[in-house]
Image (cartoon, rainbow, N blue to C red):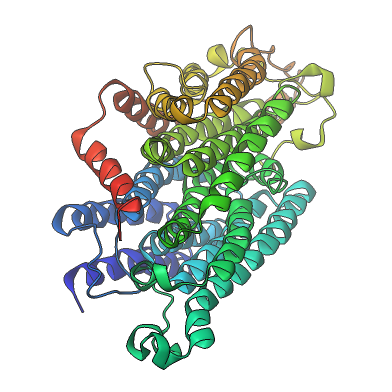
Length: 535
């Protein structure tokens, strides 16, 4: 077994081992400390893997596990995002000391291990198993608050996600049959038993790329239809996005950050690899057009719903739909847009970490995620169990910058980054996408600009209403001899554990926008070149 493979296996196994330790550890207060321990070790192994070993697979020795350039980008993003989310998770779970966190910690670490498997899987079937496993491991995280709304969101996530992943499985079968069909139609002796015989058929991406000119085009095109729909569902592309607002709105903020920046990126990676095979075989034209159409539809849906979304966390779900649309458009356009899409994958993932974690702090401080007074009975506004909701009529989020100076400011900065404002990272990646679109597809570029502006207006109304103004007055304090016993709990405040990781992520997003580090630029450029490389 080669050195890179051993290190990949260790990077996958380590979070799983610590997840097992979390299930065995009885101390509810000490268990969350395993999160940064595992995430820090995972980040160290990831950096060692990227520094010590090449990220371009050797076609002469294909393997089911390995690191290709786009996989290296996703692995690095997932590891960095998990590291900061894990530190935040210690502070978050400390505030939720009344809730058993055994399953939450174990499933969070399992998702980290499975996303590592997604990033390093060089086999069609193994990649599908990894993506499906993230769905199953992520479901308990959505149900952490254990209320009717979170239960409904969990079931919707499982049902819609399972339908999508089932279609992806069928697409994977079709992709495999595309390799078998030529031999079955022409006969092993007619085309060479060594190259195309059924006994030598393979679902390794390296083998499929090497034999792309022999794949059955009809079966390959059929597989791409199913793969785009299946993995597009996992990404949250419209119209397969219906699970996303509920799942993001009802789960803890760190779970939304992991889903938006991690699991969606993993699904995008598998779709990217499948499209690479189709392009190499000359059968990717339909998939490219479909991705552009789905990307524009996703941006349009996000713009429409962002205009009237009163719930802060659900609003971020619509922002995620929009940015998945941008990734789909970049993948569909190809060429120079592919560089922009891969760069935007990183920028969006880190920015979503800022937004979801900051919104989680604000949700906890106010006991609600509602901003608009016009829809105060919105079902998604229910406070999470254990949140310090004030007595009396429901209060709305206003003046968050005054109530939580650090989290409120970071939410506003994260919003500016998410809409592509300079000097933040997403501005650079969105500019790449727009330049590529206007170079060859002017109509697509114009539509992107209009929809980006519409999302900016829609999100801005809610974010500014939440962060600006005066916070609601504190509830009336009880009076009388039992005042001390019945006094409300201490108000939630920013701490180093709950605000520090968000500030670090925001600083990273800013640095990436001001001066893109040369190693990251080379990695993204290498991935773009490799994906478009000639056979």
